[in-house]
Image (cartoon, rainbow, N blue to C red; front, side):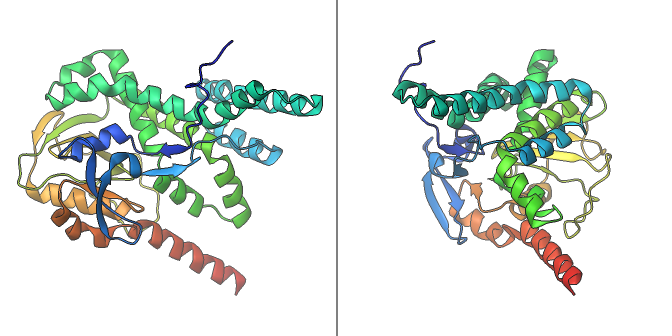
Length: 337
């Protein structure tokens, strides 16, 4: 099978939030206001933010990595375990092929280019496909057309995208890694994250799809004088009972997941009765509450339509992860003492 030069280009700058989605906060379809690592406010292209080099790139799977991946997979229903193994198999095969190729002593530039492209591009390409799957759905929702989700295939695609957009981000990774008990386990998690995150995304997407008739799917129209912001962790649980200064895992019923589709439109999947199923018009108090929570759960980036708005919320950025790390540090110190 021949590959084009384009297919062999390495996709190393991996966005963990869809750049085209962030354009909804742009006045020129390119640049947005956002917070920097030092909590300054800047304006730049959506292509420059919410990304990390080689974030989704394959890393060699040792026995330790494989044990962790399979252990996590085994917590899932058998059907999902089969899917996990199906997606994992090509990477294990690649390892075998690369090992045999190295032992052969050959040096074929085309073969090496294919191997490197597979390592860098495979997971990134999967996320690109999920994004393409929901383009038409998101456009429909922006026209307040909820009937687009009457099609079961569309709902399946949207929930799959939803699950991955939760699990694929850097803040989600850092939160999961920080919650692990030892530095060694944290290290193995981080090295395996390129695949673990994709498993988590599959699991979450399937779960949201299966509970679609239990949950309330709500379209939230924002006609207030304040826009929704978004962040590097754009889908968060905003259930009112959750104590942000607590690392306890919420119960199954404490689940109101919010996603800002645009500055004037949000989507929620609720277990509570906070909003009715279908179209809702929301208050400015709700917008402010959501924006504060989005900033609180963000790692570095909050994105908005104006510099002025980000000045209000930037003081909350990164506080959740800082809180988790402080608790872990205190636990380690107590153990040493």
